[in-house]
Image (tube, rainbow, N blue to C red; front, side, top):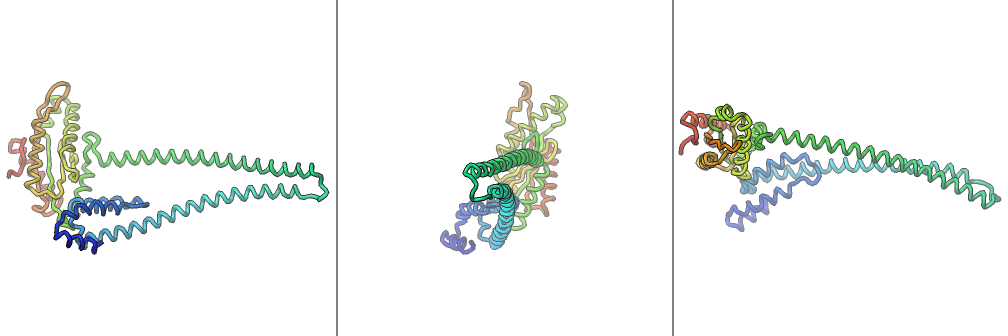
Length: 334
């Protein structure tokens, strides 16, 4: 991989655009073939390559990809062993059933043994008895297999219900039920990923706080149902305007946080100002009545702070400064 990337880099005279084409192809080839426990690690590598395709040329990224492949192969082998073990168990069960039929057949063969002087009619009767015994055994086996199939189907149904419940639970833990953006817990996880990319590959990022102005007054005037409608609508608007690589979530109450990878402070302020203008001009309607909504925004760049936590704190300070300065504005000014 290192040799191939090096040759491509030489042939393109240092043009990094080729890495933007290679990055998604590399991610696609890394997708686990059998084992599914590698999804989180793959998501981290995918995040890093998506935001910094040129990192493909770094020894750190190549080493990380090699380690990922080695681990995936090992997990795939273990998964195959489990599948083979299961097949052996099924095979043993089938062999047991066949032996049962053979036992029945042997008993019938004992019955068929007799003198060579036995009449044709006598031999015919014994053969009929053998056939009857085999038929009975086959029916019993078929009945047991049918019962086992019902049991397996019932278990399969229960497993599907449990999997669906688990999927819903996982989704609820990552997605806010009202606004359908990420939860605070999911934001914290994504912030850690952004920080890892910053520490490893110096991919900077900016965070942006957005808070609805006078939200308590809106709840008091129009009711909490109106407040819920406004929050849900704000979530839809935010989801529409963020990029695919951005991450938006509800930080709490009427406060939202957006993580902007590969974005500096000036670009972050531009994004916040665009959102401020969109919300100010948007027609929020509740029971045929328009409610005027504005937001205040605070922005901070990771490269200008000492840690991820301080970056969030700095952005929140800017948010409160925007509110103290009259609301419906973005801080810091630029």
